Amino acid sequence: MDDVNPSVGGALPRAPRRTLMQNAIAYPGMVFMIVAITAPLTTIASSYSLSLGFGVGPGTIALTIAMAAVLAIFAAGYVAISRHVVNAGASYAFVAYGLGRRVGAATAMVLFIAYNLAAASMTAGAGYFAVLFGQQYLSLDLPWWVYAGGVWAVVAACGFRGLLDTKRVIAVLSCVGFAILLAVGIAVLVQDHPTTPSVGVGTWPSTGAIAFTLAMIAVSFAGFESVASYGEETGQNRNIARAIYTALAVLCLIYVFSTWSLIAAFDDVQAVAGADPGLVLPLAAETYLGSWAGPLIAGSAVLSFAAGAVAWHNAAVRYMFAFGRSGLLPTGLSRVNQRGVPVVAVATQAVVIVAVIAPFAIAGFDPLTGLFPAVAGVNTVAYVFGLMMLSVSVFASSVRGRLGDASYFVGRVAPVVSTICFLVILGCIVANYDSIVGSDSLVIKLAPAILVVGAVAAAWAERRRSPAEAPAAESRELATVAE
Image (tube, rainbow, N blue to C red):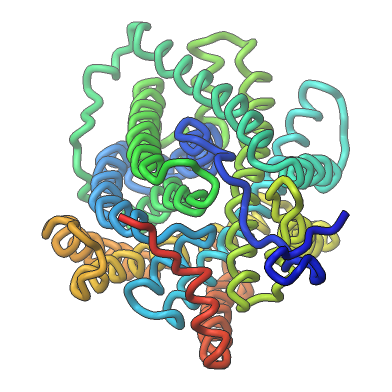
């Protein structure tokens, strides 16, 4: 039977539900969701191995610690504003809270595009590594897009099931990745190796492609801030603060420890990584754990990419839901089912994944050389830009007296420091964009233009909303939490 509105005598149907399921995810689930988004196993096997071979080499450890410190400073203000704004499209509401709806819409659209691209690239990545696993260990020779289609089906199914079930899948897959990285690291640590004592964690890079390493490290942490998008679905607001700092600490530790173990595992890790960065982790695993570790690493890489695809899908869906609820995208995207799952947004995001992957599959491109360079470049620029704008919004909110009892450090010092750091990082990445993406393709070089187009379109859509629509949207999207 349809729901009715008792306030009008039960004659009129209620408006469709526009809120997500309450208490669907708690502190541990949020931490696992962040960790799954970053996909530590595949990050070490790809981004960090690339940095060891083509970036600053062993200096990657120092830059990782520096990046984590900057993100910790950023998180101070980010957590403060999360206590006042709870919204599925966190960046949209957070930036709008301090800088206005137009800037908020533009910034959130930049991150929204990046999240959708990340979900697609993770799905394609799972297909690519599934091909390697199938050929080497199962004697199967299927196209990568066939495997990607299977992963896509899993991603969509998890989306329709909702967070209660998805977080369990994410937790299992994340634990597998952690276990493998820890096993390799501990094996290197306990076995006597001549290079182990000489590895300096505090060595600051003075040469090498610093911009390249900054890009690789930045994208390795990408998504940790998305925890705030689950604000509507967690029972306690303090879960956001606990989850974001826990996840940041866990990621920093695993990245530093795993990178150290790879450096210590070889006499010249830069030479090994430079020859084939994809073999660094498997070679270390087989050398220190045994030949049985090879298929385990290969299979786990597929699972890690699949977990990342599910997590990025969830993040993109929540932004899509928020945009639909605010009126920036069709309002149908904010429809949820009886269990509080944004089913229309889930289905739409699944279609977006297909739309991104299909052209590369039809053209016969390899995901690793075709899809990944374009996505990595775009997402790095989008991510750092988004963090910078969030920091500016925290400062503006503090100046306007909208952060309550937040300290001077949290409201003023922290956002200024993080803004300057992100601006420097962004400038370094943009100035060296060609070398970072490693492609001469004009399409890949111009790919970041989609961020500009999306930002302008979102700001324009916000500007064109009628005076009656804007306050209503603001009441939905900038819901201030009672202190």
